[in-house]
Image (tube, rainbow, N blue to C red; front, side, top):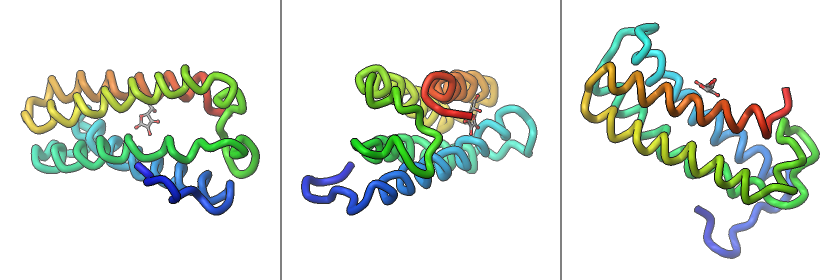
Length: 134
Ligand code: ASC
């Protein structure tokens, strides 16, 4: 989502950016999942609004995985850069699940939202298992 010429000035700026995007995405996805799973009261408008934000946020982090950002304040596994195609495919899967969740969230059906949120969470976890250090 960055135009040409809008590269990050420093590696740590790219790291901060992608972490911030994941943090915001996780906050809004987490609210949807918590409502779908009955951990906080279900509110159809809040589910739809938060799913929308999470879906938009899901598009943002990946421009931050530029060369030279495998070191520093990051839990990113260096193998990301050795298997960038696989990493981007895992990212695309998550973005697809977030987009589906966003559609389902607008329908207001709790069971359908719960299923879609579960599928989305699996796509988050799949990437963490392969590409995030603990
Ligand atoms: C979340 C969140 C994640 C995923 C993951 C699913 O709410 O922040 O990273 O779900 O825990 O297993």
